Length: 164
Picture 1 (tube, rainbow, N blue to C red):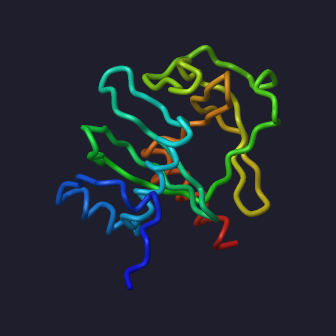
Picture 2 (picture 1 turned 90 degrees about the vertical axis):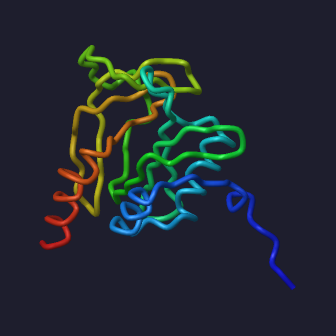
């Protein structure tokens, strides 16, 4: 007897060959991508890019945060990129305490319909906490860690802390 599918498994993905290689290189499974998209579409917690209309969302089921940039065409979700990190995004609980730089972003919060602003937030990994300026939603506190940061400086910081 076949097990019933989880609701996220019903998400139909369109991933290019290059995208499949990227997922493989970054050790991200298709199920992880489906979970991110399912979570974003079910909760509305996603960003939308002003220029492309693409969505960007994250989901943290355990100790890894997965990010997926995608678009939807009918029942099919085209995946453009996916990445992950292990940092935990921290805020004081009140976005009013964030220090805003005034700089904007091409992304806006789909839930709040608010453009992201660069703000001082905190990242935590293991016992270390880092203040950093990142685009975030002043309404709900959605913090964006973009792909370049996640696979670059965040990955380096995670490795350095693990090597201590």
